[in-house]
Length: 171
Image (cartoon, rainbow, N blue to C red; front, top):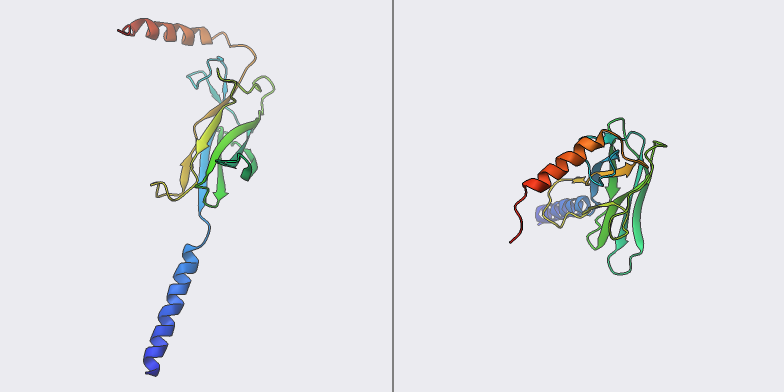
């Protein structure tokens, strides 16, 4: 009988340890890139340049109230314009996004605004309850713009116009 009690006690200890290991907050590795978009086309293109030293931040907001519940700031890009940081915790009921904070280039420091007056943001999902089974989360690229388009951008505009001419008209 004493042996059975010892085996049961050991099994309970192992179950407790397993539960403790599973109760740790998840960690997610957030990766993304920042560019200088020299053509003011408001999308990454062949003339966009990776921006080293740019600053981004992550903010998660409660989906109902909009209150910031989690943030990671002061994240800088490396010499390839890439950032990589750890976000802790499961944020299933929150809206999380990476946004631009500060450019490292004086001549490419404007944060573009879209047609709706919104600043660019890369939405990411920080939960293990969404079908993604790894710890990596990849944010869409973000970019600062120059005050004026560079001369080489005429080539891009011409290509875009040619593509537009090749499109079939809508019925």
